[in-house]
Image (cartoon, rainbow over all chains, first blue to last red):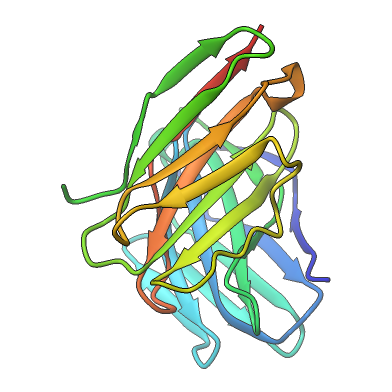
Length: 112
Length: 112
């Protein structure tokens, strides 16, 4: 059974810092890995999608990497801003299954 | 529309009543998913539809929960005889192949 773990559960940083969020998964047989952002009371916004054959994806100040063999992904946020404050969720789509398995998220607070 | 839409955005009901939640997926997306997010819990898979295939109902928590998808597009999640533990945010997502899942804003269900 696929399990996804995100560390840390919460993170508070001053504005302008670069930061890394971590995600690990137990079964390396995945199709892809997706990073989402969730604002309080809102749905999920897809940030980055990494296919199993890829090593990283970039969008603006965000960079996500994938090491499938070790079951790890990181989300790097450069020059953080207060508007980046949200919960960040990692989810994997496993081989043979069409459902996403989610971590419990990292709650990020960027202080002005 | 451009994204996944869900209605209603909020639903308050009394214990024992039936409720229906609606999801309109992104046009052209063949797959549709329902997830549940309870307070303090992670995102939990409920059911998955792919084209005309039989749905994957493996995540439905009890036989009080059912869902249908008409014409390969709109989906309705029905909860019969609601219980207080059914209170949660119900999220719908759609996808095309393994190109990532895109989520709607969710329906917040409160059972009194």
